[in-house]
Image (cartoon, rainbow over all chains, first blue to last red; front, side, top):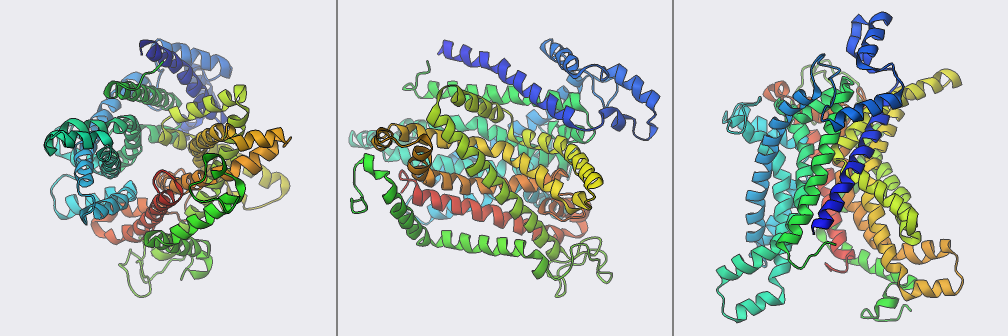
Length: 309
Length: 325
């Protein structure tokens, strides 16, 4: 197991390196250079030249890349093009804190509602509640967040006045509720569907029949045997659930005016603030790869039959 | 072979002559599902409406109605109302559907059968270096959060493609390439394909890896069949069901991602309407306060597209996947 983790972790820098190279070359594909956008109407050849020098954009691409990566290995993502004189690290960290809180809130909703819901529905197989729940899960999952978000805003903020419409006040502020729900809704439905399938799968296994035959009461069977075994496949998809939330995060942050990573990366792309986009992609990949690894490890932990070599 | 019963051995279960019967029976089962039929009908209607938007839409997508200038609610002359400039929302939704359906179909075909399947076949059949190369590249794309990958590709490729198109216009004396929106289509397709091929390549590779060990493949090899023949005549037809299921299930995501890109301003560019732009226009707080119905028509269209594909994917999976049947 230890060896396996080490081997996977050694793969991580390779992936990071390749992603960075890919994103970097994509940026070089763009005609013109970011200096034109930075200067805008104040553009003169002289100023552009000076800026290029400041940011080292006049050097050969390979030199720029090596220099940049050397910085990254020291934990320095360079200086933002858009906000002159501000380090990407500092800029990004502030946004990551916001987005992390938002995503954790959404993930909590997804797990907290999706799992019990799926588990409950699985026990209702054969009654009218089961097909109804399954059908509504697909229906809810299929609503694009670009539709859910404005609809929720319209209903709960403009009509009912329950919560303020936009802005950000941290984890314990009422303004986190709508974006977190909006991001979580497709996840809840998806999670419930998955948990239902997984629970049903386990419920029809022989060892459940054995447990019942030896006289265990239903609550104990559910708690000790069904739930635990049904959780196994769920663990592996958690990392992808988190990645799925990311897309919703971009949308929710833009509509609700939340100063998070999603908004930052879109704005930076339009403003050609390449150091920021580079940093976001590298941090994003890093987190995602680690999350997948964590899921694999957790998988082996919850299911002792699984051994990685 | 066609007379062998349903409980036949694994080795001839996958033979070619029976795979046709298998598909025919699958279609029969699919048609027996009310939900699947409803989805097919809805999708057919939406796709036809989109493709023939130019003929069936009551107005032009840029036509301004000066009598309904400030976003009128739905009425008899404008079934879904008009937007803030007085343009008919229903017309714009139909044109938006056109963009979405064309883009997603083109992208799924390129990502699935064209790139995904061929890479999967090659990588699974030959193994070795080609296999690890394809799979490592796939891993790389998969390690990159999908949303980020799509928006970075769309945002960085557009200016380059626009420059190329302008160059072609200038040098070849062609006009209106950029204005026709071809560049937008191209950029969005590339972005959608960038993440769409991986799952398919992995799936086909896995299928081929297991099919390769089957006795009939060995028999074909022993009879001197060429690699090409084994791949396309023996392997591919047997992998068709999971490929169809994966493609159908992927369509919902494709549609959602296309709408997402346009919504961000990275997809189809105004004045051409797209569902994403319509949702953006209708979904801003200022518009929601006074004209909430602007969200209704594009919202329902987008939802119906994604939902119908997801439900159809589920139904197909039930019908074609031997494990869930």
